[in-house]
Length: 550
Ligand SMILES: CC(O)(O)NCCCCN
Ligand SMILES: [Zn+2]
Image 1 (spheres, helix red, strand yellow):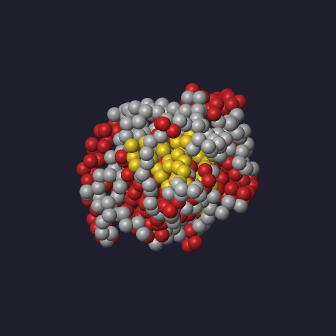
Image 2 (cartoon, helix red, strand yellow; image 1 turned 30 degrees about the horizontal axis):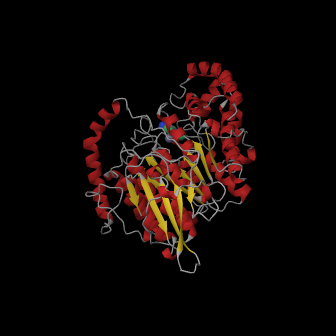
Image 3 (cartoon, helix red, strand yellow; image 1 turned 90 degrees about the vertical axis):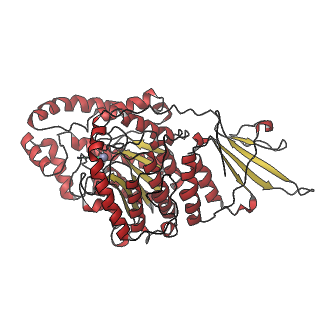
């Protein structure tokens, strides 16, 4: 981030905004303070000092034309020189977007920042990163601005990564609370880009009120199966709802898709307190969502800010995301009590719609019995027929209408939530306990064997769908719900676990127990008495009060 850019923009745009306000409304929620409070929080928490700051650049015409049409770009190019009347005329042709003379410059910087981030990650300069940008991008379409968005920053970044770095498969995860229809339209017939979005929908009653935002928009032609929409048909979704969708839809499909790069439309209006989302997920959930995605694509992850309008939860969510990108262990997940019925309905509809495209969903026998379910684990059951689902949706709607008034009263009060817990990480993240006659590899720390605990072995899957079934659909949700203080993991030479599955397993499970993980690698060594030597990779700090054994 280049500080004097902000001063210029504020200095320049202030007088413009004042007179514009006189002529027609300026957006009340997509305000400059969104970036300043987020940036200030990163500085205050010391996270900014642990990051490198990548200079921004303007996206070039060629970059923008990767997604947008010539005529649209030429039209936007004229906005800095338009009279106020022309500007108003221009703005009114689009939905929910606010043009001012400086937005073309800002929109090029926002897209350019996303491309700079892709360059930094793809060239190995950094492992991952986050671009804090305005205006956002995921609603803007080939020839139209929409929902505060002018250029589609993340869609341009995906096309750029494919063109510049030969990336074969890009996963775009859109955790903003609005459907990024611009991204969907851009890639709906493209099997090289898997677009996943959850969004407030309320059976098409919530903006942008599109039929194609529903779960049955799965992509077109060659892109069928590569567009995943998870509609939230009620407000008030919580951490459990978000984690369930990750464990039972996104992660299994993402592992099967096996992306070379992960882009996140990081909108934080899906967090508690946001006036747009009206959801109840706490900011620390983004630490877990980020951690779960970091195990994909060799850790190549670029998060680009989209929405997020509560100036308290936004900076907290941004800090949770950045701290996880830096490798710090995620905090203990707050109040996980299983997904709500409406979320389960959506989860079932999405899995049914995508079962034909993804083998991990084909073989997943864990469906849900919505009435009896109260855990992150989905209990096995007969696959309900579609009319059962429809009937359930009717029930859900009646239920929803009944509760609507209660919801409104509740949301009317100012939402309050606890500050996310402080996340500490020791200087030494990992230690290796070795027999005395073996030298300690660089970067590890010797631990006195008297501190070592005992472990249990893990027997299990060695292929992707088996991995998806056992780890993503069972182990992970169980682990999150049980919320232990320690994860014990062991591997024997005959466990049948291939290295990549083992690597994923140790990575994913570090999202639990605040990263407290003990791993036992049992290695046979040729010795006269046939004895074996045992290595213990110790990844462990802080006080413990509960153990989880695998
Ligand atoms: C970036 C975004 O998804 O937060 N934009 C939301 C626009 C809402 C218009 N009613
Ligand atoms: Zn949004």
